[in-house]
Structure formats: structure tokens, C-alpha cells
Length: 156
Image (cartoon, helix red, strand yellow):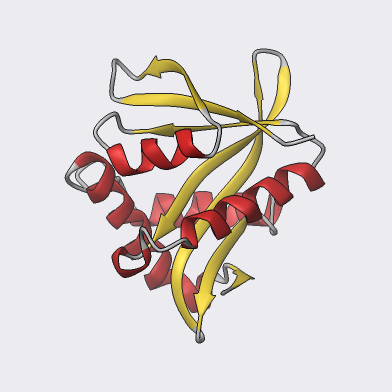
């Protein structure tokens, strides 16, 4: 598997499909996805700011996953933030998530942060198990219980 920068001209359909599927997996539907054009505008802005953080996971020249990684301020300090970990259904539970996670840790380390966060639906038990297995801890419930915030630290 390799990671390639998202090119919205070439990968538009993949990123929309992957992001919508992430909503379905997390929340049972993509009703809260919003506008495709708003998502693409946000993705363009963020990928220009963090080109190594907005990548597709590709196997045999076929996109099989997507990462969206940024830096944010949280409680007065700079942290890494995972906006999206995504794998197509046929690749889940087969070790590919660890490859995405390792890429994210390298991105955060290269950007000088030692803590990272993400939010997950409380009903996405497979994702929660994966995050806990990788040393992350639940630190908060947000959006009136719709999501859980998890935090992890980079290994020293």
C-alpha cells in the first residue's frame, strides 16, 4: 500500500464516496454529510495547508482508503487532529488500519506535536476498539452525545 496526495481533479468521486460511507458506518446514514461542494472546498483548502495530511491509501493503483490529518489548537496547545481514517469495507479488519495509523503518527511527529485527537460515533464499536488498542483514551463526549473525543500520545 502507498499513500498519494489527494488530487481533487482526479480523485473527486473517491473522496466524496469515501467520506459519505464514513458517515454511514459511523452514524447509520449520510444525512448529515451536507453539501458535496462545501466538502470539496474544505478539502481543497485543508489539503493545500497540509498536503501530506490529505492522502489516499492506494493498493495496486486502486484507492482503498483516505486520511485527513490536520493540526489544531486544543486547550491552549497545538495538537494533531484526525479528521478521517477511512478504509473500504473489504480492507477493514485486515491490518490496513494500522498502516493508516502509523502514517498519521509519522505526520504528527514530523509536525512537532506529541498529542493527537479524533472524534468517533459512540456506536462505531470497531473504530473505538481500534483506537483503544492503539493506546487512545476517551477524554470527552461532545455534540450532545453524538461523538466521543479520543486522545492519544506519540511514542517517545
